[in-house]
Length: 292
Image 1 (spheres, rainbow, N blue to C red):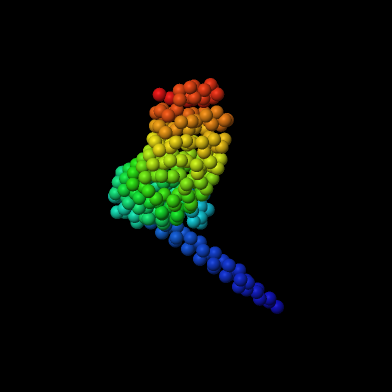
Image 2: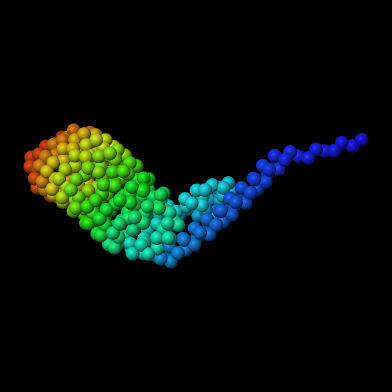
């Protein structure tokens, strides 16, 4: 008498079938992403862009399981440097396909808005240099992961309210912002460690920073409209202050009470009395204080 062997459970076959489908789909997707990535990378190099990236192929060779991770195919580009904003505007498809963590745009005189950045949802570091035509930064509302922002020679910038929504921001560099009249947009940026508002000739106060207890550096070079900077007196983590060219500032005695202060720059602060600067040097013997 023979006993028929029962067929394997149908469920096991279904599981194996879906596993095969998953593996094929994953590998197909990976191959497609690799091809797309390399095409974008090749085009960027042809355009003279400098691209730093992690090669998915090398990642997979080191650990084959990485082939099944989405970030292996999508998160490879760490930084893209573009020589001119004209090149950036003419080839937005390339930058969107690369989707970098950091983006540097030099010679950005033709750049008038940042709306093209909205799709770069991974962006953490943004540097735009020579951005004389830029008038607003509204696109920052769509870039919540930004931790570092540099806007250099942004002489036409008058509306920067969107910066206040960058709650992850740690370092902010705004230079030659003659249209800047207040620093209220800084008030809730509690993660901020370094802020530069250089050349903000229309800036009249920095009261908004008074509760930013993580601030370590404040640079206010050339902010000739400032009358006092007493808002800095509660920033006990402050390591350095640069007030070069702040001709309207008349008192920095509060610096004596900041225990971590190590670097103070006061060149061109013509409103400060010589004896007050001398007293400051006496109170802070371990601090480098630079005067004319």
